[in-house]
Length: 516
Image (cartoon, rainbow, N blue to C red; front, side):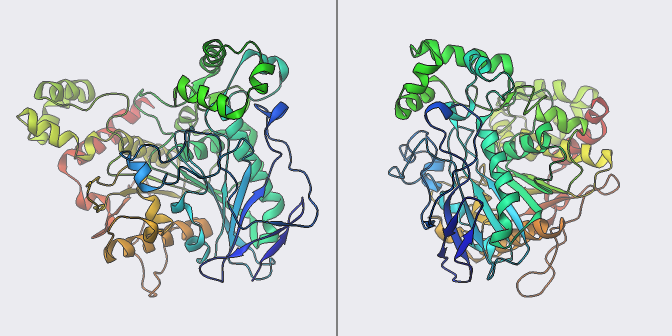
């Protein structure tokens, strides 16, 4: 098995996985530590080292709030479980899981970007274990990047210091540097640099969309397929988005300096990382630290670029969960009066038909309906709209999913935001939840779909027992197709949705798209 590999900077040694046919290389430097004068600068190439670098442990995570502090937070219970995990500003490392024996193989490559609202998250989260994906003949790479104030600060002094630079997007440039490292080095790990799929969830999905629409990546061949999960980064119907304009980002930076008594960029760089991190957390979250339309890395809001078709014509796989955030940007209807107002605003002269299908004539019935029916799920409808835009534009490789199994556990959370991670990484056994055999069957098939897509651009294929998995069709205007993923049923979404959701999907397809 391939236990050592020669990168452009030196030799690395990995460790056997639980399955000894897989080797994991953890904590490979892909850029210089972004500290001192390199704080708030684009990543620079890693320095060479002598001897063999031990890559048996994950490198420290990016500076952020200490994980695991809030026991009542669902994400703390799921995967942010270790408050003692090492953390450092020196964080630009990536990890590789490979099934290669010699390093001469040419396996497809998948590059993972984690989520966390661009303010938290890390590659060492236990659900991101890449072994099960690698067992399917894939080289998996997970890339760490700067988050929060370290990854997304913009300030006039930074713009004066580097007038041709990218502002407020250092975390995005870290990801891009990871992709460049893959192009230069992954062949030594048995990976094919000409068959790379980028994928991510939530803010990781937003990262994929940013990389997909960045003019800096156009024609560079850094990736060839893309997957974005749990709805992050898609915007429709004029809803709010995580993206900042350059002016907004610059004002955030000025306000951050003023609030914390930072008189200059030099003083900010001289301040220790823990203090700056705390200042950044206290200053704000997504609305303060997130990607910026800086005119260089991003020249427009990625959602606008997607709507206009200004992105590479490559196969895409995307979708969301059943418990995604409701009606992003607006509160869900809670009363009969709210529901009628919503119907009138959204559906014009068809509002009465929408209300008829709701069958909700009491406030209690309205609350139950709007928190259960897909017709009210903003992120689901954003995905539906994007699917239709791609089909209308004539793109091939349009694979959308809707993930909504019953998620067991004492808190009965439903298929909450990002819950598909346990499944598509096939890491259910690491979770505390009492998953049953049906969940493991679903996870196996989902991991198959994802890796098949990375291999060929088509998710279909055989299950481990050599039987055909349920067909996942690429959507066309003549046959829109969304794959429902549940523990009891996998198949065409239309077979298991309400008449109300069918109405709203039709309305999206037939009415709203006339305005796009």
